[in-house]
Amino acid sequence: DNIIKKLSNPIIINDKEIFCTLSIGVSVYPIDGGDMPILLKRADMAMYLAKVNGKNRYEFFDIKILEILNREFDIEKGLRVAVDKNEIKMLYQPKIKVDTEEVIGFESLVRWNSKSLGIVSPSEFIPIAESSGLIIPIGKYIISESFRKCKELTLKTTKKFKMAINLSEVQIRDEDIVSFIAESLRICDLSAEYIEFEITESIIMKSAEKNINTLEKLKKLGVSLALDDYGSGYNSDRILLLISPKFIKIDMDIIRNIDSDPECKIVENIVNYAHERDMKLIAEGIETIDELKQVIKLKVDYLQGFLLAKPQYLPPRIQEDVIKLIQLLNEK
Image (cartoon, rainbow, N blue to C red; front, side, top):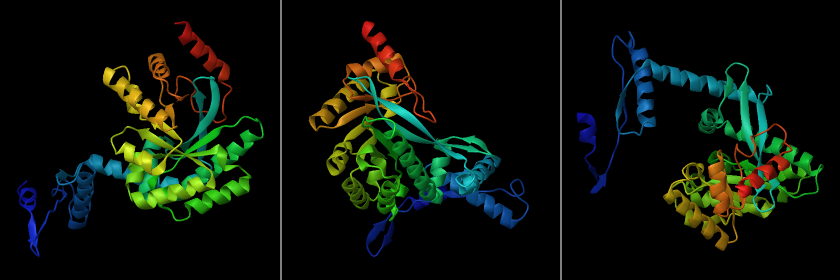
């Protein structure tokens, strides 16, 4: 506590105030280890936890830290061979147009069923893939598979639709991403008008100028952009002006709390703002009939969620079920 307090005071260097924070990891002899190398290694693990928990603090080593780091190591090791072992699979979740009750597109979602670890949630393995850089080869596989499935669907229907694919900040920073996407479209003989890339506000704000430049290059290829998790707390209006997406996906947490008056007002404001600028609104994560009724009432354009259709290995024939559900709501 004294060390952290002392370092919280500014350090004067060349007449300038420099502020410093520090994260401390602590291991205790002999509980955490009997020799210096083990103690240092475990203190380092505790310091890692201090950084994860917000920095400028200290943490004592705990055996749970070892379990967390071992799990991360196993996941990273498994991800390195997941594509080659055919463990990465793609699911496709439909999006429904409110006024016509038609399936107008799909979101491409990645799943990992590891032979050694079992089913690993994307919320667990995607951050590790990003921090390790493995999201680059895995992301290229996801894009290629999504394009291939999209091409397959175009041969089965004359209707226009969008295949939405999520892009991480690490992928956008990849110097080859634009050329890879262009080449993948060529290989699949797929028109760019079928493809939509989803990016979050937080992604754009990291290295904003460079990332926006990459997104502009993607738009020149003919693909669409969708702003995901809209309303999650960043400078949303500025982001909209910078990238001019065709679609906005309302943050799932807002949908989850839509029954409260403030959240309803937030969604109403987002809808009005977007429609004034000729942007379309997607309400994702719809899981209850009450949420569905609210977003329809608030005049969003598209719907997505487990209530309407779960992600499937092949896009399901759900249009009749969706129509029946919406008709039921209209009757009520």
